[in-house]
Amino acid sequence: MGIIYRKNNAQPRIVQVKARHVNSLKFTVAAVLIVVMVLMTAIVRLSSEAAQQRQENSRLQSQIATLQGQIEKNDQDALLQSAAKEGQRSQAVSYLSAIQSKLKRINEFMSKRGLHGISFRKLNIDDKPKSETKLYAEFNNYLDRLVNTIAYTPMGYPRLSSFTSFFGSRGNPFDFGGHEFHPGIDFSGHKGDPVKCTASGRVVFAGRAGGYGNCVKIRHNNNIETWYGHLSKINVKEGERVTVGELIGKVGSTGRSTGPHLHYEIRKNGKPVNPKQYLSLNM
Image (tube, rainbow, N blue to C red; front, side, top):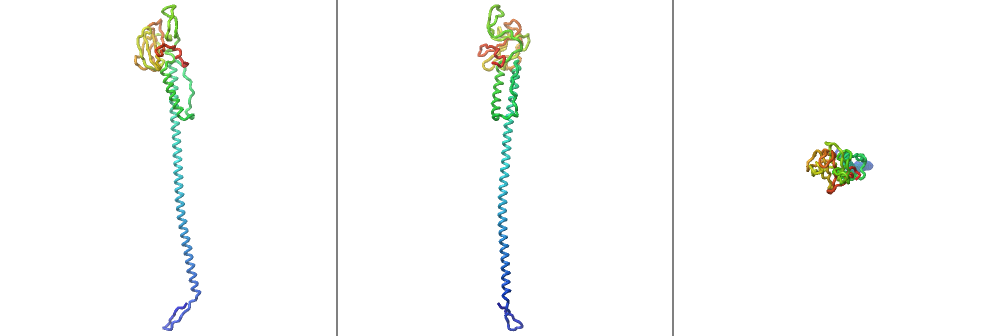
């Protein structure tokens, strides 16, 4: 390769550049190009890896959010289940409380009739229900019926005293040597002693009734009536609702009577039955 060189309008001459310098320049340029390409490749690769990393991070964050949501849902479900169990327990405790209250009322009915209370196994509200709350509900309904039956069934004594005459055939106190049918039980007493009804019901008669003297008749369930005769005083009126153990009158000697006492009679379907079978729970 030659370069034309002139000096002082002299004839130009060609200066020669050595080939080795050109080759060196070519090598340098090539090296620079290689470095640039390597750097660009590295930059592209790093950019691609960064993009992949961002995608991976996004995917992981999405998975974490999903897992967190699932954990929160599981916690919420657990709380709901716990609340449901607590609700069932609360309902069971409510049933048990009602049961205990009814058992107490039953024993109160017994006490008012002059009978000993019934011994029930105490229910522990901490015990787990054997078949959830359904058992308690059924038992609760059963006790409702039991309380109602006991309240409206004549049971026990209209007054606490000894007997002077029983149900059935007996000697006629007004006809010595003769016999008569006595449709009830007579309780000894003094004039003015309290007389209490043996079951809840409605007063269907309150007044004078022939040989019964002053008499109170109360109608109960199952076509049963209780009659209270020879009273010195009547404390209730016809049509009035009365509750077991309520004072309905006082002992006297009115009507066909030889002295102060209470005539107590039970009639079923209009016919007298032996009151003795209604004096206790052994019916």
